[in-house]
Image 1 (cartoon, rainbow, N blue to C red):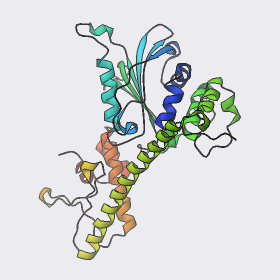
Image 2: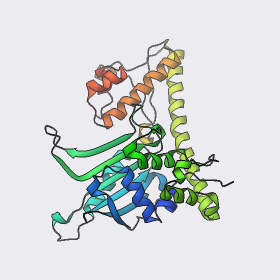
Image 3: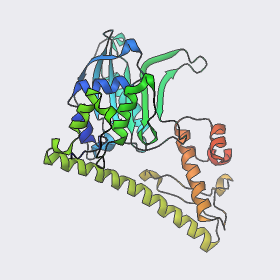
Image 4: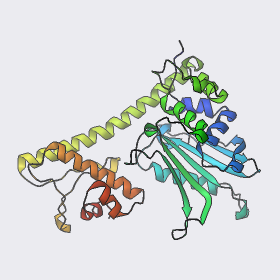
Length: 329
């Protein structure tokens, strides 16, 4: 019985989509918000940048120039694995792809649209039913007027649940392939094998198709993911417990501070200078303290996404004072 590797690992993703343009074309046509007259007809891979020490967290996975049915050209940058600042990094990389199209002295009308596609192997949006996020530049007062040259799409794979979409069948099947296939898979769904491109992708994900060096890189990838998550989780829990213990043992209203500069979410800091009560009252249970800290994390993420403060207050139950305290100084 074949054994499979998880396509969310960069070495597997690149083997499938970075070496087989017809598979990437099918994948992008299914996932990007392209009009029917704008489907990708052909594509070419652009030179990749030098990969840093942990490629999964810092670099583009696939960078391609695409040509649609009408002969129009656009660029797609793809990344995987959500980390702190991912959205800003994605915007930066897509903007860089947009800028670097022009040689010195060339006219701006030669610039082609850029789509940034982020396949996220974790959840970042608190609304459980929303897994497909499409961002573009629009006129605030008249959203029907838009600048289409730069668009970002983020897909939260853990939230995706297979349903029957008659007009989105290929999208559903590709997303099932990305979210469901892993080392525990023993039976491939029949409907996957009915699509030639997905059947080929399944075969390319078989462990037997990888060299010893590629398998070692695969293990290193998941080790890096595990370390990253452990560091964040461990530091968060440690800071949370320490804050609660101080409050219980010393009887002092103190909050929780969790290594902000290390990418660890902040807890609660009492700001007497600002006249804001942010601490955890003595006697609060650990469960209540943790729930409150989690609300603050959600609120910070929503602020980063550009949501209005009063909307965040409705969603989280936090006060406007607490939400304003999360804003950068």
